[in-house]
Length: 248
Image (cartoon, rainbow, N blue to C red; front, side, top):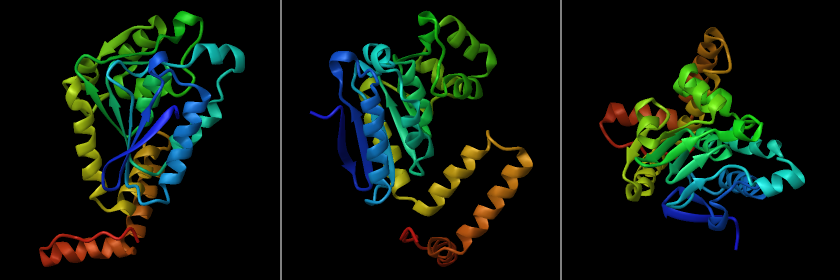
């Protein structure tokens, strides 16, 4: 059976479930590769939103250490996750440690269980995060809490993650996936070109200067005005009707 299962919980919504329960869904190079390949295919098959999930015990426990020692991590395989234009939601239950938390933070939105445990324990192995942990955690939580998690290997609960702005929703464990699916449905019902463009612009907010980001945002805005969806949205507003998105 595949280490990544594909489910379609709603029209236009793809759920990718990490399926390595005996290893608490530890991330192998193969898992990251399968996730990236699934996202690549999803770009052309009508998918409009993607949810990444694990199971009740673990979203993902981190890197597969046995493979890590034998092969080393192939971090280039993460590029497809980081560059995907599809909006992605992490549905986090149980533990999300190391690469598991980095995977969740690679998504655009995060739904966490109240009792979820999130951490970057790499320092306890004489290592440090290598797939975005030091950067995304600091941007989301601030240097003080991020330093404690990275330098001491500390962890936080799903409730704290939500209160500090790392997660979008915090619900009981049994409500995590239904909540993520509801968010996926809302994204899938929206204008796909605009959502993908807005995702790109949001990503540049941390990478470029404010002036460059503002110029890029304005250029994308005017590009959207020239699309069929852009004209349809404005017309629908003027005519007081629901817009019909075509993705063109």
